[in-house]
Image 1: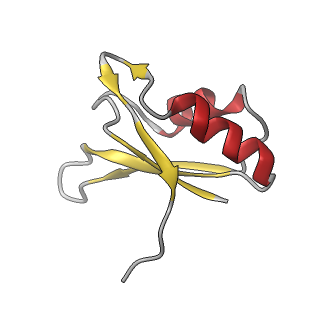
Image 2: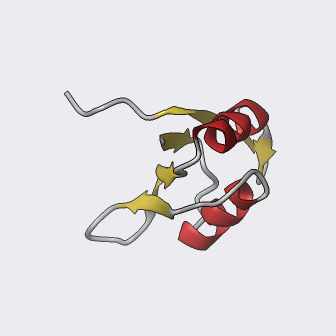
Length: 81
């Protein structure tokens, strides 16, 4: 399952994002989206977890939770239009 994670702290990188989800199961990939020119985080990212039940547990536990003083927005990623 591909998971959208919004409202990330600006200081978060791929490893911090993966670490936040690892306590709920195996993280196959975690990536924070960055602006190309500056390399600065855009404040959101995506996590891939292959086990649907682990992914669902992570979404339920982390959505709205405080991370670096910011409430995370976590849900199943929707395909691009």
